[in-house]
Image (cartoon, rainbow, N blue to C red):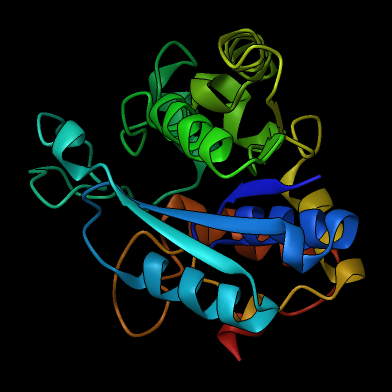
Amino acid sequence: MKALVLSSGGVDSTTALALAISRFGKENVIALSVSYGQKHDKEIEASKNVAAYYGVEQIFLDLSKIFEFSNCSLLKQSTEEIPEESYVEQIKETKGEKPVSTYVPFRNGLFLSSAASIALSRDCSVIYYGAHADDSAGFAYPDCSPEFNQAMGDAIYEGSGHQLRIEAPFIGMNKAGVVKMGLELGVPYELTWSCYEGNEKPCGKCGTCIDRAAAFAANGVEDPALK
């Protein structure tokens, strides 16, 4: 069995990559990294370092044209500032009724649809991606929810003639649980990048930095990317 893994260079996708490699062997795993018009290239560079560490094939895809109409604060053309507060605080502001400002419109839907075409072309039978329960909480990132995963899974399975399925191994797990699994797998978290800003060091203030720090702290270890 061969697996295609959506690999952003962050904690969740790198843990998903490590899990796929542990299950199928690196020779049967392909990493797919997607550019979507983000403000910096730190994510892509991190994904390259991770793929090189594991010795897996890496494919790059540019979907930035699709997102050029969005004013999501993560994108180059955005006039919005990236919030410097936790997701819990952001969800309180949205009252759990709409996504947070760092939600890129239907990003996972586009990523998975594109990945499905590539996976079928490369004889892969499963796609892994790193969505977890914290991301879907309070409607923050609705394309990380169990409902979305089920719907996309059904669509891809049917649309591929039952040749391909998707798997989100962390869909019922929080980020601390993802890190726990990754530590057990020996994931090189020092190579990963999560911060929404593209500075030399993580800002420590954006939602994903706060979420990441809390996940490592919950496991009683220091984030190796900060050493």
